[in-house]
Amino acid sequence: MIWNFTKMQGAGNDFVVLDGVRQRIEMTPERARALGDRHFGIGADQILLVETPSHPEADFRYRIFNCDGSEVEHCGNGARCFVRFVHEQKLSGRNPLKAEIATGLLVLDQGADGEVRVDMGQTRYEPEALPFDAQGLASRPCGDDTLWTLPLPDGSSPEISLVAISNPHAVQVVDDVDAAPVATQGPLIESHPRFAHRVNAGYMQVLGRNEIKLRVYERGAGETLACGTGACAAVAAGIRRGLLDSPVRVRTRGGLLTVAWDGQHLSMQGPAVTVFQGQVDIDALTASFNTKEAARP
Ligand SMILES: N[C@@H](CCC[C@H](N)C(=O)O)C(=O)O
Image (spheres, protein in one colour):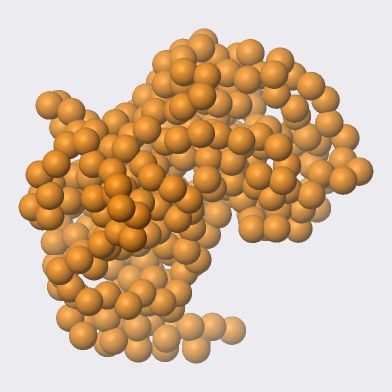
């Protein structure tokens, strides 16, 4: 079966975007892994699937799959690419757009400068919201936030803030984000058994009250060049810790995002770019990807 696809990126976080309104797309974890594979597939951090909504107020529904095949609740950079895709593909000319995601409705607005602004919805911080098993763990208050000490198998014990922005985040503050152990410690946090659904691990360096540098080891994708929900989670944690004021410029390895918080709602602004379009034979791609899976030691 041939699928039309569009390759997009938002601050270097890259996506295969599929139109499930005008073509019949049956996504499976295996197909998502094959599409996302950088050697046997097209290559992407996440796969976005645009569909007809079930919610009466929504213009579209969009679903998000990490490149490990897992379906997830939210994706900030993907939300901006979704708007650009819908407009470029002439699926709708409406602005702002309302999109249904797994956990509710998002409002997305494309500005005259081409940047897309997303109302990212509300955040929660209690352990049950991620969920996180906090039983018996040391914690301390920090401003309005609670920092949890998480002992890891590598001997480190980072102090993390918990943020659920539909999807789960564990955010820590570091002195030098370029020297932070993102590649080695990130996977230990991502798959820590206290996070029942795994977690995105964020590392934030505070440059000033309105500016941070951020790296994120994403659940199901590894370190990406930028993570939109990670940027929102870091800003929420930084404001609650008393380190930041809204709005905050978030410097990622793939570009600049701006996050504002009115105390209730987070909004995020940043780029959304089409890279190329193409067609893929999904059955042939998945079959060739499976030869790689089968050859694994
Ligand atoms: N890159 C995304 C987040 C994608 C989902 C995440 N890896 C998860 O599993 O929650 C973003 O821009 O927010």
